[in-house]
Image 1 (cartoon, rainbow, N blue to C red):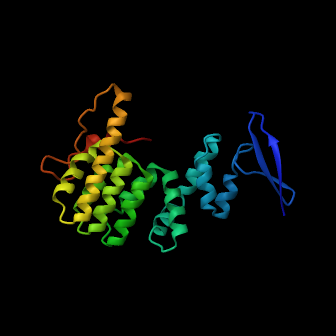
Image 2 (image 1 turned 180 degrees about the vertical axis):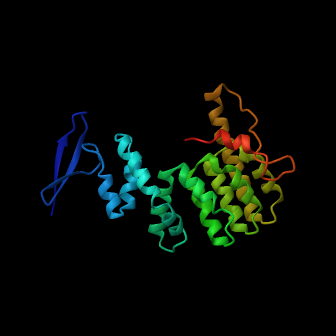
Image 3 (image 1 turned 90 degrees about the vertical axis):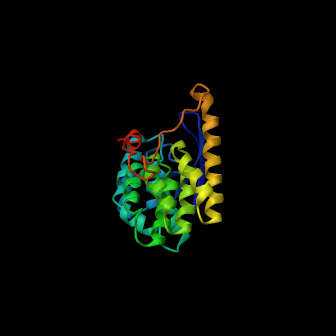
Amino acid sequence: MIRRQTVAHPSGYTGVLHLIRGERRDAVGLLRPPNVERYARMGQIDKLTEAARSKRWPEAALAARRALEEHMELLIDTLGTKNLRRVLTARAALKAIGRPATKALIEKIDDPVRERRQDVVHALGEVGDPYAVRPLVGRLRDPDGLVRQLTCRALAKIGDPRALAPLRRAAAADPDVSVRKTAAEAARRIEKHARAAAPRSGGSVNRPPSVEGPTGGEEGADEAGDQEERP
């Protein structure tokens, strides 16, 4: 039986505590840090993900992200399952992990199985790390149309202006009309975001660095990629 009790937090916040079998639990994590060790021991990925997002308890958030990293390969494998709830949980966990998850996904972006590539590019869009822009741009030449379409959407979610030129080329020249349409929409979304950000940066939009080499390939973007590297 669950009883509810309203309490006043020292910060002035009034929240609801759940009393389950006599044990007091804070439903929103305001009164005490998440029990990351317990979540990790029980393999509670959703709880670890929630803890990893905590702003109030940064040490617990860091511990939760590290615990999630130990499950990273399993999380990536889960992306290919047909259980939507598990897929959504895995995507959320990978997003909470951040840069390490981005790098692990990038390692699998050239998988020979097209469904695997579809899962990877979709997940990279959910994670939203600009570090993934260059490898994603390379997937705009993927032989599978759905991979190319999902790549356009992923680049739009990340919102990095470096993807504009490749997206415009895809919008003009991709053999699949659905990909052309999605690429055009992605480019418009990034442009809109760049214009909205311009006033905050002094009112001008600088030309983004290229993510392609002089011959139009994926090479030659090391400098741009290194700028996105974070510890």
